Amino acid sequence: MNRHMRRGITYFCALALAAGSAVAASTITTRTLQAQYADISLEVSGQKITLTDAKGNPVEPFAVDGTVYIPARALGDILGKEVLWDASTHTVSVGKAPLMEDAETLISAVEGSHPAFLLNRVPEGYAAARQAMLDTAGDPASTAADFAWSALAYTASLRDGHTSINPFGNGAQALLDIGWAADVGHLYLTDETGAVTETEVTAIGGLPVSDVFAAVDKYFAAENQSARDLNHAYWAANKNLLFKAGAAFSEDFSGMAVTVDGEDRTVAFAVPDTASAAGAGIVSTERKGGVFYVDLNQCVLGEAVDAAAAELAQAVMSGTNKVIIDVRGNGGGSSDACLQLLHAMDMEAPAYGGFVRYSELALDQYQPYKRGYAKTEGSDVQAPDLSTARANPKIELVVLTDENTYSSATMLGVWVQDGKLGTVIGRPSSNAPSSYGDILYFMLDNIAAQGTVSHVRWQRPDTNADQETLVPDVETAVGEDALQAALDYLAR
Image 1 (tube, rainbow, N blue to C red):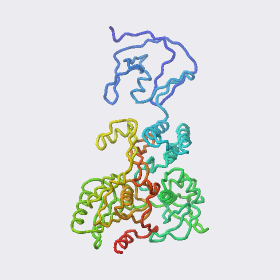
Image 2: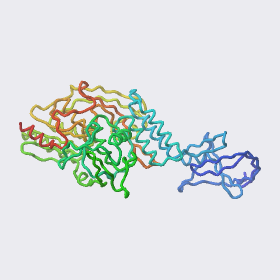
Image 3: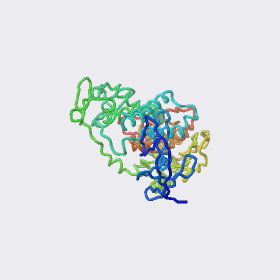
């Protein structure tokens, strides 16, 4: 067969398409053209591509008057884009709007992996937040920032602190350079020690504090009152949130008015120095008199925790009977790191209950190295069990917590409290003892934001205890030195 022959073709319209474009014909015409088939091949990034139709049959590019034509569906397959034909408008669409792609990726990750949808625990506001996000994604006038905020509202509607997106990046964000603390809907200044004063902030950038708090609640999930207060205090100072809430900035955008006891004062924005926190290390140990002190900043398995656990075990064998494990500011990680410290003291934790939801995302991220997942749908359930707890009567253990104790670090406090392994001292954690967790990661490519979604629902071992808040056995005030309180407690 002559591969360079010309063929007569009758057709309605010929379309040359680029990714994401849509071309419509208002009228139908018929033309006869001479198409040249000349073994035309297609390479993408140096790789030869075989073009196929919707049924997988090979299709061949051809040339007409020096222009090469490629079937739209085959082009869409190459680009990984869906190809649609709208007969009513004679429109071929290759790919969806970028924001709609991200919206569908987010919904797929959340609804395909989150346990709430199998447990019938989807909050009342979820459907409305979902639709609002889709409406924003489908609005041609929407910006990436508009969509990001609507996506934050969508994830916040699940009331799960582990499920969210991060459109802000990993760097420190500009905050109002002022010390304050939130307390059940109110905002009070703090003194140089961090203690809460009676001086109340009533407006920020011309907005009542209640309006700012309402914006915070819309975009950021809170699992308990401790989380709400923590969110309110942080995000009420955050430049991005205040801009979204409609606060009035100074002319040069470097600060804004803060109303304190009826008087305005101008407060500048500053980017916090995070170097000291970053340099704290995973874990450190020291002796404070007769107390062995473990400062666990991250729940991360590895040499650092191995060494700390070995030191702790040696101290216990040598007769040390008072131990403090400090997980204030610890955002979590692997609960096995916390278990390792308990085992070093010859203690065992009570068992959390768990509802695990399987998904493609969970299989991809957990099967290769951790849990041996083999399913992509369905669930497994494990009941909580207090009977597995084992204290060491020779050890007086104190665990320090605060509002920034989260995830696996909160689990440590719960284990110690529920299993009667020791005493929890400090501030209530912003992470509920019974909550969602074990996050899976995904990307929203078009707005370059990483997302996380829970795939496990955890049940506190003591089902009769407070499921929403880890309330310390000895609760300290905001700004009070919890470590000193623990040392005083152990010296009693």
